[in-house]
Image (cartoon, rainbow, N blue to C red; front, side, top):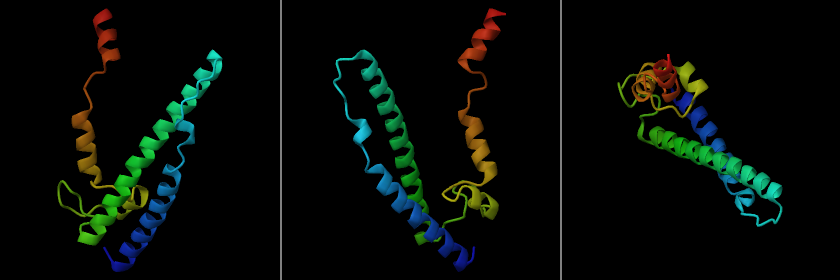
Length: 127
């Protein structure tokens, strides 16, 4: 990977890091509201759950961005952590913080995915 490409990725990550850090600071939706109205409590709980999900996703993405910046600093950015081969630039353009090439990512996802979901098993056993 060229120095120009690395600089481009570093700029992208630094901008994304700033954006995420500013977004994570907004935690007003996480407050618990003690409304006497049941519908208001349900609505606030739903909004709170959505905010928690967003916070978790943004925190995870921020960790990914930090890790990518560390890989740039150590000279390992763009190299698959599993097979040690170069990650295709098209993949990096699509998912810049990725740690794995497509083949290793697919293999990891395939290993973690159960062959049959609980729902599918229940359908098979009912038949």
